Length: 247
Length: 247
DNA sequence: TAACATGGTTTCACTGGATGAAACAAAAGT
DNA sequence: ACTTTTGTTTCATCCAGTGAAACCATGTTA
Image (cartoon, rainbow over all chains, first blue to last red; front, side, top):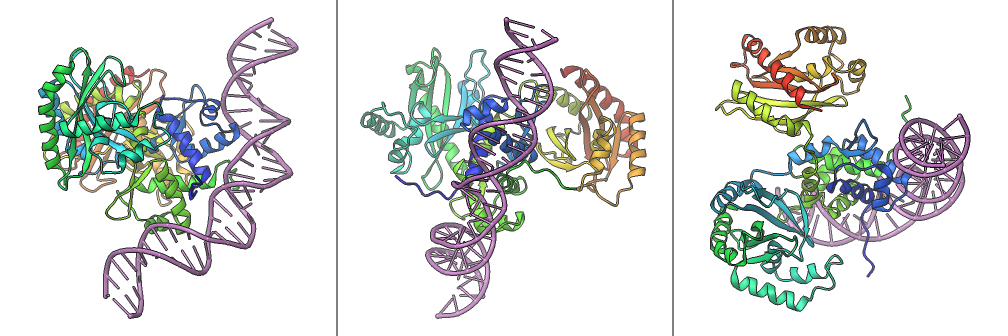
């Protein structure tokens, strides 16, 4: 189980420090040191470097660290005009208006999924979905879509990941995925978050490769199992239309 | 002129590599190596580390590198609810509707300025302003505002920066800044970009500290010098109102 | 007011890890 | 086929990153 290391440790650590700011807003030096499991002085130097390059700033009042403007600079160049999260936005808004629930777009990233786009329902009680959120691939409707329709081999790869929950029966889960392939869509009812439910369908590009999962999510009392199955055709159709938009 | 170094070289280099992606979209290994002036093998290792942490990805067809989803994850947590770029957005839209030109919000970051928010004019011919852009502090209406109204000492500090254009007469420029303080706003006419003009006013927080520059920009044939001075009162008033919104 | 606790900052000796030259592999162009 | 370009791997050298401990500034408790 010896992995080849061709990475730079100091950089790895610095990026870990930076990723602390993916959850929460401000952190103190010792706080971060505790989180990443490094010495105060080490983290101090790493933070000084990150600060120097504008990736973090210190808030003047307290001495805590925040994300800096270099991140903004980078994020401005994140999406090209041919990016799914840009191209599919109008269709997502259409679907939101049609179903009145929050729409999310997910892609798989290694053994996780990332919400790359979202449009919010306008109802008083609604699912709020933030772009950029990184979620496990083991639970949720879109997780199952991203695994079920993925290239062969991906399933095993993801389930072999150390992050995969050990208590989850792989055989049963695999069977569930096969059912989803047959049905063409997946649902989840209070699976990841209590009180929330979702329906999800795959988006394929022109060459038939899975590129994203489109999902509709909302409070579980509105999105009852029955209701979700009613929604499914509209979602599948939207996902299909989105696929034709992509290159 | 020996500067104390309490930064980590490898991390510094890695961040330089990452910042390459602030301009342009995709880069090859050797391309990057040339840009940052490092050895191929060094950049290779740095990129491998960045890729491992999800900050860059490789596009499958060619072997070039792109920004990864970790950047998206971070950018999602960039702005808090009390962030100027969020709080002032409605007021910026108001001003845009009033003047029908593009509105930008700038803050100073060391010896540069960064556009932290923008709302676009809806006219056919308009200034297009991208959020996150990093610009010099030596030219442009908002640059002059950010320097003129800054805390004492900032002017000298910025002008001492190696990035400051040597040919710019500091005495005359300082005089110009004093005039701007007296007037309460600044203009620029085809100063940084030919065909573009802008008016800018300072935003102070409750304790009277400069936090940002609000600017209106558009094509120079619409924003003539006369027209800009007509606009000034509205911009100053909007900037003042924004100041009262901030904490 | 002193004693204590809590975070951030600096110093320093040690050595392990980052480095760059050079060799290698694999495409892409001629 | 040869040449050029770009990405990858290896390896000896030695410098730069490391962590312990000391230090400093606050704020908190007794």
